Amino acid sequence: MKEQKHILSILVDNQPGVLSRIVGLFSGRGYNIDSLCVAETTEPHVSRVTMVTEGDALILEQIKKQLNKLINIIKVSDLTDQDTVVREMVLVKVTAKAEHRAEILRVTDIFRGSVVDVGQEHYTIMATGNAEKMSALLNLLKPYGIREIARTGSIALARDLKVK
Amino acid sequence: MKEQKHILSILVDNQPGVLSRIVGLFSGRGYNIDSLCVAETTEPHVSRVTMVTEGDALILEQIKKQLNKLINIIKVSDLTDQDTVVREMVLVKVTAKAEHRAEILRVTDIFRGSVVDVGQEHYTIMATGNAEKMSALLNLLKPYGIREIARTGSIALARDLKVK
Image (cartoon, rainbow over all chains, first blue to last red):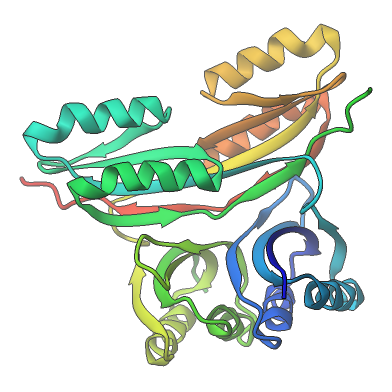
């Protein structure tokens, strides 16, 4: 079966239980969620859930139909095949011995990241980009010793249709 | 009852169903989740869940105890009273009429954001910071017309204990 990455963007009423029902629909079918972000929008009581999943397209179609039937769900958008801006953010605490600091800062600079905390023997670096870019950054930092990492997972907005 | 913001950071085995059980513990008690991020770490099959909640501290204590009992949960850290680096990311699509563009770009610049997509009549802006900073940015952009917004919610890493 063909498995591909899907990005779903779901507007929901910000009520306890909504997220649980959404996530339950996926886990009930053994459908893994790679990443998930939930946060408020500018509308009071409306939150946006952005979800990256990988799996069979047919099952996802069924899940989407069920999502649309749930109360408190305002809108389900599948951004998978659309032209979108996709970004995630990473916070990574990396061991920074004196002899490695210059190189770590160079890598951070190339990825347009920034050092947001400094300790005796570590830097905490923040960077943004798409998932591939973030993985590339982490691969470059790995040899120095990654102590801790927190990633947001992807968020996405559709680009406007281009006039041809 | 005293309600305050809490930040929980939870390391989990990346199995279908884990997230559903975590979220279910909160919604089962009517405890609202303000924001939530789930994404992989550098360890294969280990994900980190970062959660911002608001509510009674006693109930949260009970939830934390139950979280610790769940299988597939590796570690629960409460970062609420710790010294942490907290960041979130926002993607916002704002109407940008010709006469407002200079000012929108100025605001974006001040917040160290960047324009990641441009259309005939809109900019999509990406920015990072803590929740207060992001709200301030959105308030400044609001008068121009916010068309769409996606926020990641907060992620956090503890700072190292400072040597006194």
